[in-house]
Length: 89
Image 1: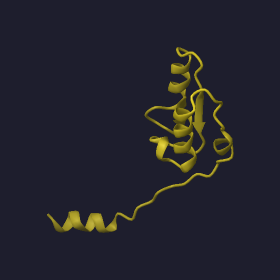
Image 2 (image 1 turned 135 degrees about the vertical axis):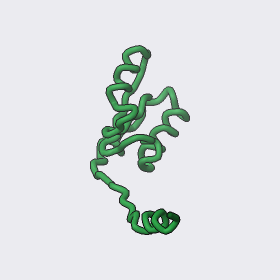
Image 3 (image 1 turned 60 degrees about the vertical axis):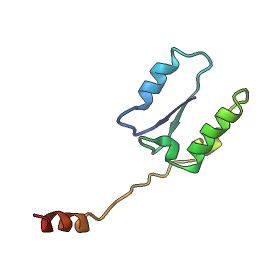
C-alpha cells in the first residue's frame, strides 16, 4: 500500500502511482485534503496503515478514506513569536 496525501508537495500522489507500476499487487490510497505525513492526518489514515500491516492477505477497507472530504487548516498566531524576536535585538 502506498498512502499519499492529495495536497502533498514533497511526495505527491503521482509518485505513488509511478512507484506502484513497478510493484506487484500494489494499492495506491490518496487521502483527500491531506498533505505530507498523511499517516498522522487522521485516525482513518493511521488505522489503514495498521490494518494493512496486520492483515496483509485481506482487502483493505477504504470506507473512511472515501467518506473524508473536510479540509482542515492549522493556523498559528505568530504575534508573540515576532515580539520575542524583536525584543531580542
